[in-house]
Amino acid sequence: VLSFIIFICYIASPAPSFMMAPLLEFLLALFLFFAYASKLNEKFKGLYWPLMDFLRCVTAAIIYFAISIAAVSKYNDGASKAAGVFGFIATIVYAIDFYVTFNDLVTFHKQGSSDSPEGHKSEDEDSDSDS
Image (tube, rainbow, N blue to C red; front, side):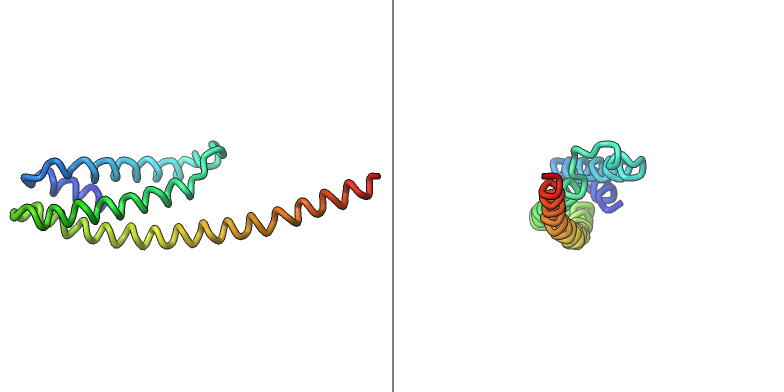
């Protein structure tokens, strides 16, 4: 929603060159939302969906921060200032999402690495008992 609001603000401002980033982020977020809603993440197991979401959050936070600084400092109209303020809010939201997603990835990675040695251990024991 914030990406769409920022996109509308940039359309109304004299800084139309900044409108591509919120539009792409909005479309990417919409795609990932529908992918999770339609359970595409369960159908396409080859893609690591949490990592894609993590990278989207990181890049969005960085890009929104950069274009918000540029919009607030370079342009004096109300729409650019509003887009910059909403961009800073979006930066905070994406940074929080980045933090939460990172913690989920670390937890998932720790669970995966702790499970794998036990799985190899039981396979080794099974092969020893077969001999």
